[in-house]
Length: 232
Image 1 (tube, rainbow, N blue to C red):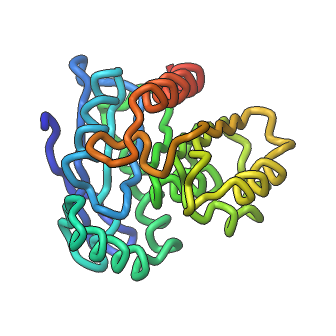
Image 2 (spheres, rainbow, N blue to C red; image 1 turned 45 degrees about the horizontal axis):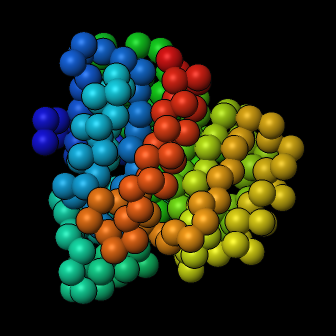
Protein backbone atom coordinates (compact mmCIF):
# COMPACT_ATOMS: atom_id res chain seq x y z
CA UNK A 1 0.00 0.00 0.00
CA UNK A 2 1.27 3.46 -0.84
CA UNK A 3 -1.11 5.65 1.16
CA UNK A 4 -1.05 6.85 4.73
CA UNK A 5 -3.50 7.04 7.62
CA UNK A 6 -4.84 10.46 8.57
CA UNK A 7 -7.29 11.71 11.18
CA UNK A 8 -10.68 13.27 10.42
CA UNK A 9 -12.39 15.38 13.07
CA UNK A 10 -16.11 15.16 13.79
CA UNK A 11 -18.24 18.19 14.59
CA UNK A 12 -18.33 16.96 18.22
CA UNK A 13 -14.54 17.07 18.49
CA UNK A 14 -13.88 13.34 18.21
CA UNK A 15 -11.68 11.99 15.46
CA UNK A 16 -11.43 8.84 13.37
CA UNK A 17 -8.90 7.50 10.92
CA UNK A 18 -8.97 7.18 7.16
CA UNK A 19 -6.67 5.71 4.54
CA UNK A 20 -5.43 8.56 2.33
CA UNK A 21 -3.93 7.91 -1.10
CA UNK A 22 -2.42 10.55 -3.40
CA UNK A 23 -1.73 10.48 -7.15
CA UNK A 24 1.85 10.92 -8.35
CA UNK A 25 1.17 14.59 -9.05
CA UNK A 26 0.17 15.06 -5.42
CA UNK A 27 -3.05 16.80 -6.44
CA UNK A 28 -6.36 16.01 -8.10
CA UNK A 29 -10.13 15.77 -7.66
CA UNK A 30 -11.22 13.90 -4.55
CA UNK A 31 -13.03 10.64 -3.88
CA UNK A 32 -14.48 9.46 -0.57
CA UNK A 33 -14.25 5.67 -0.75
CA UNK A 34 -16.92 3.91 1.34
CA UNK A 35 -15.95 0.49 2.66
CA UNK A 36 -17.55 -2.92 2.50
CA UNK A 37 -18.62 -4.66 5.71
CA UNK A 38 -15.04 -5.92 6.14
CA UNK A 39 -13.62 -2.53 7.10
CA UNK A 40 -10.82 -0.58 5.45
CA UNK A 41 -8.87 -3.76 4.78
CA UNK A 42 -6.16 -4.51 2.23
CA UNK A 43 -8.70 -4.73 -0.60
CA UNK A 44 -10.25 -1.32 0.10
CA UNK A 45 -6.78 0.19 0.48
CA UNK A 46 -5.84 -1.30 -2.90
CA UNK A 47 -8.92 0.32 -4.46
CA UNK A 48 -7.83 3.66 -2.99
CA UNK A 49 -4.34 3.18 -4.43
CA UNK A 50 -5.80 2.23 -7.82
CA UNK A 51 -7.91 5.37 -8.05
CA UNK A 52 -4.93 7.42 -6.89
CA UNK A 53 -3.05 5.98 -9.88
CA UNK A 54 -5.94 7.21 -12.01
CA UNK A 55 -5.28 10.74 -10.75
CA UNK A 56 -7.61 11.09 -7.77
CA UNK A 57 -7.02 12.01 -4.14
CA UNK A 58 -8.77 9.21 -2.24
CA UNK A 59 -9.91 9.04 1.38
CA UNK A 60 -11.28 5.74 2.71
CA UNK A 61 -12.64 6.45 6.22
CA UNK A 62 -12.91 3.85 8.96
CA UNK A 63 -16.70 3.92 9.21
CA UNK A 64 -16.86 1.24 11.93
CA UNK A 65 -14.77 3.34 14.36
CA UNK A 66 -17.71 3.99 16.68
CA UNK A 67 -18.18 0.22 17.10
CA UNK A 68 -14.52 -0.83 17.01
CA UNK A 69 -11.71 1.21 15.43
CA UNK A 70 -9.31 -0.32 12.94
CA UNK A 71 -11.41 -3.19 11.59
CA UNK A 72 -9.55 -4.91 8.74
CA UNK A 73 -11.18 -8.29 8.16
CA UNK A 74 -10.29 -11.00 5.70
CA UNK A 75 -12.76 -13.42 4.12
CA UNK A 76 -12.73 -16.54 6.28
CA UNK A 77 -15.97 -17.92 7.67
CA UNK A 78 -15.19 -16.28 11.02
CA UNK A 79 -14.47 -12.96 9.26
CA UNK A 80 -17.83 -13.13 7.50
CA UNK A 81 -19.59 -13.76 10.82
CA UNK A 82 -17.88 -10.73 12.37
CA UNK A 83 -18.57 -8.60 9.29
CA UNK A 84 -22.31 -9.31 9.46
CA UNK A 85 -22.28 -8.50 13.18
CA UNK A 86 -20.70 -5.13 12.41
CA UNK A 87 -23.17 -4.56 9.60
CA UNK A 88 -26.02 -5.12 12.06
CA UNK A 89 -24.53 -2.70 14.58
CA UNK A 90 -23.74 0.03 12.06
CA UNK A 91 -25.88 3.17 12.25
CA UNK A 92 -26.37 4.58 8.75
CA UNK A 93 -27.29 8.11 9.79
CA UNK A 94 -24.25 8.50 12.04
CA UNK A 95 -22.07 6.95 9.36
CA UNK A 96 -23.38 9.48 6.87
CA UNK A 97 -22.42 12.29 9.24
CA UNK A 98 -18.87 10.89 9.19
CA UNK A 99 -18.89 10.76 5.39
CA UNK A 100 -20.06 14.37 5.24
CA UNK A 101 -17.15 15.32 7.52
CA UNK A 102 -14.81 13.50 5.13
CA UNK A 103 -16.16 15.49 2.19
CA UNK A 104 -15.59 18.71 4.12
CA UNK A 105 -12.12 17.57 5.16
CA UNK A 106 -11.16 16.82 1.57
CA UNK A 107 -12.49 20.15 0.30
CA UNK A 108 -10.27 21.95 2.82
CA UNK A 109 -7.08 20.16 1.76
CA UNK A 110 -4.53 21.75 -0.55
CA UNK A 111 -4.18 18.49 -2.52
CA UNK A 112 -7.72 18.81 -3.87
CA UNK A 113 -8.24 20.39 -7.26
CA UNK A 114 -11.87 20.69 -8.27
CA UNK A 115 -14.67 18.40 -7.21
CA UNK A 116 -15.37 15.52 -4.82
CA UNK A 117 -17.06 12.22 -5.66
CA UNK A 118 -18.20 9.21 -3.66
CA UNK A 119 -17.44 5.56 -4.43
CA UNK A 120 -18.69 2.59 -2.47
CA UNK A 121 -19.04 -1.18 -2.45
CA UNK A 122 -21.75 -3.28 -0.76
CA UNK A 123 -22.62 -1.35 2.43
CA UNK A 124 -20.49 1.41 0.94
CA UNK A 125 -22.64 1.35 -2.19
CA UNK A 126 -25.63 2.36 -0.09
CA UNK A 127 -23.53 5.08 1.55
CA UNK A 128 -22.24 6.42 -1.78
CA UNK A 129 -25.86 6.74 -2.97
CA UNK A 130 -26.75 8.57 0.24
CA UNK A 131 -23.67 10.78 -0.10
CA UNK A 132 -25.23 12.07 -3.32
CA UNK A 133 -28.36 12.95 -1.34
CA UNK A 134 -26.83 14.23 1.91
CA UNK A 135 -23.11 14.93 1.80
CA UNK A 136 -22.65 17.46 -0.99
CA UNK A 137 -20.60 15.28 -3.34
CA UNK A 138 -20.50 16.13 -7.04
CA UNK A 139 -21.08 12.57 -8.29
CA UNK A 140 -21.38 9.03 -6.94
CA UNK A 141 -20.60 5.46 -7.99
CA UNK A 142 -22.12 2.50 -6.13
CA UNK A 143 -21.28 -1.17 -6.58
CA UNK A 144 -23.96 -3.65 -5.52
CA UNK A 145 -25.28 -1.26 -2.90
CA UNK A 146 -27.41 -3.02 -0.31
CA UNK A 147 -30.80 -1.66 0.84
CA UNK A 148 -30.66 1.41 -1.39
CA UNK A 149 -34.35 0.69 -1.90
CA UNK A 150 -34.97 1.61 1.76
CA UNK A 151 -33.80 5.16 0.98
CA UNK A 152 -35.53 5.87 -2.33
CA UNK A 153 -37.49 8.71 -0.72
CA UNK A 154 -34.15 10.60 -0.70
CA UNK A 155 -33.84 10.44 -4.48
CA UNK A 156 -35.59 13.85 -4.65
CA UNK A 157 -32.46 15.32 -3.01
CA UNK A 158 -30.11 13.96 -5.69
CA UNK A 159 -29.23 16.09 -8.68
CA UNK A 160 -25.64 14.95 -9.31
CA UNK A 161 -24.55 12.24 -11.77
CA UNK A 162 -24.56 8.66 -10.49
CA UNK A 163 -23.59 5.24 -11.78
CA UNK A 164 -25.02 2.21 -9.98
CA UNK A 165 -23.69 -1.30 -10.64
CA UNK A 166 -25.70 -4.41 -9.79
CA UNK A 167 -25.19 -8.16 -10.23
CA UNK A 168 -27.97 -10.26 -11.74
CA UNK A 169 -27.52 -13.09 -9.20
CA UNK A 170 -27.14 -10.87 -6.11
CA UNK A 171 -29.39 -12.09 -3.26
CA UNK A 172 -28.71 -8.87 -1.32
CA UNK A 173 -29.91 -6.66 -4.20
CA UNK A 174 -32.07 -9.00 -6.29
CA UNK A 175 -33.58 -8.08 -9.68
CA UNK A 176 -36.92 -7.00 -8.13
CA UNK A 177 -35.05 -4.54 -5.92
CA UNK A 178 -33.07 -3.18 -8.85
CA UNK A 179 -36.33 -2.61 -10.76
CA UNK A 180 -37.66 -0.61 -7.79
CA UNK A 181 -34.51 1.50 -7.84
CA UNK A 182 -34.73 2.01 -11.61
CA UNK A 183 -38.35 3.13 -11.31
CA UNK A 184 -37.56 5.59 -8.51
CA UNK A 185 -34.64 7.08 -10.44
CA UNK A 186 -36.28 7.07 -13.87
CA UNK A 187 -36.50 10.88 -13.96
CA UNK A 188 -32.81 11.23 -13.05
CA UNK A 189 -31.43 11.60 -16.56
CA UNK A 190 -27.82 11.71 -15.33
CA UNK A 191 -28.08 8.40 -13.46
CA UNK A 192 -26.98 5.19 -15.18
CA UNK A 193 -27.95 1.84 -13.69
CA UNK A 194 -26.14 -1.23 -15.00
CA UNK A 195 -27.07 -4.85 -14.23
CA UNK A 196 -24.44 -7.43 -15.14
CA UNK A 197 -25.67 -10.88 -16.22
CA UNK A 198 -24.57 -14.14 -14.62
CA UNK A 199 -22.47 -12.55 -11.85
CA UNK A 200 -23.01 -12.27 -8.11
CA UNK A 201 -22.45 -9.86 -5.24
CA UNK A 202 -18.77 -8.96 -4.94
CA UNK A 203 -17.98 -9.53 -8.63
CA UNK A 204 -15.47 -6.67 -8.52
CA UNK A 205 -13.51 -7.83 -5.46
CA UNK A 206 -10.31 -9.64 -6.28
CA UNK A 207 -10.06 -12.79 -4.21
CA UNK A 208 -13.83 -13.18 -3.95
CA UNK A 209 -15.38 -16.47 -5.05
CA UNK A 210 -17.63 -14.27 -7.19
CA UNK A 211 -14.85 -12.20 -8.75
CA UNK A 212 -15.40 -11.86 -12.50
CA UNK A 213 -12.59 -9.98 -14.20
CA UNK A 214 -14.34 -9.10 -17.45
CA UNK A 215 -17.33 -7.67 -15.59
CA UNK A 216 -15.12 -5.91 -13.05
CA UNK A 217 -13.11 -4.28 -15.84
CA UNK A 218 -16.25 -3.11 -17.64
CA UNK A 219 -17.74 -1.68 -14.43
CA UNK A 220 -14.47 0.07 -13.64
CA UNK A 221 -14.39 1.65 -17.11
CA UNK A 222 -17.90 2.97 -16.57
CA UNK A 223 -17.00 4.25 -13.11
CA UNK A 224 -13.91 6.05 -14.35
CA UNK A 225 -15.93 7.47 -17.23
CA UNK A 226 -18.37 9.06 -14.77
CA UNK A 227 -15.57 10.47 -12.61
CA UNK A 228 -13.71 11.83 -15.65
CA UNK A 229 -16.85 13.44 -17.06
CA UNK A 230 -18.01 14.87 -13.71
CA UNK A 231 -14.69 15.85 -12.11
CA UNK A 232 -11.94 15.68 -14.73
